[in-house]
Image (cartoon, rainbow, N blue to C red; front, side, top):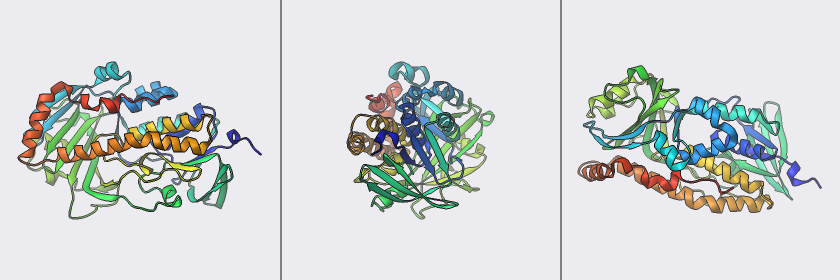
Length: 397
């Protein structure tokens, strides 16, 4: 009988979570087969915020230099009232985050982050990447897992030690494991785009992360690519229709009409964006079971989180670190995956609840928004302190 350590781990999905898991397992000396339905990696979206809980994992995987090359560290988080532009509070990021948490608060383009992860994975002989393959069936067989994958030439069966579904919100792996439930439309759409930093409106520092709050909508902006580009996310309520288009689809009109009553600098941010993409926001509770047989789920496939805490990518990176440590322990893989699920569930569900609460708070209308703004103003530079439990997280091993 072959040694289980000789069988690879099968990972479905080569997004940020799947790539981080592949790198983590390979760095621990284990073989990996990474299965991706796309024929090439072209990450949708624009920016991603990597708080210290995520950046310390990436740095621990040997990515300090490439991360420093593609990511920046905003100077401050500045919160403004959307309709007047008044600053409610400003909290230091940059060096302050490094001193407090021992790791940076970074912002990067998603495509750049995915590329440094892919380059790191490709450099390791333990990882085999199969592009243009879809997962068709999963079977637990004795002390192994079998996966049927479909490519251009037909069906191929792979055998592995365990299988991990890192294939996103609409996870095919979850369906094959018996959970065909769909997430619910949250009633909001995130519009994403970028523009040249030279067009930054007067009075807004290009090196800051900005958060603008208003009735039924909010804006976020932060620098990308050496502060040469500015990433903008505008989240608005959209109760009348589920989507303004397919996720990631180019949208010519953009969300500007929803911000006509906002301060001039906020409207200037929107006007500067060169092209918009609309992303409907979906929500769901953490799946009732992540682990079935010799397979488990990771990141959005297990526990999607709304973007009101900027923790979706960070949680997937955390999942990868914990799961890699468990799978390479002395325990049976099934036991390791169940322990991973049990240890991660309380944290990710707390983050999910906090993100939902933030979304409600950001979009308050009169008069509750006045109370919110007073609380934020009194918090001042301690604005990020309430998230120490998020940012201070680190892998146990």
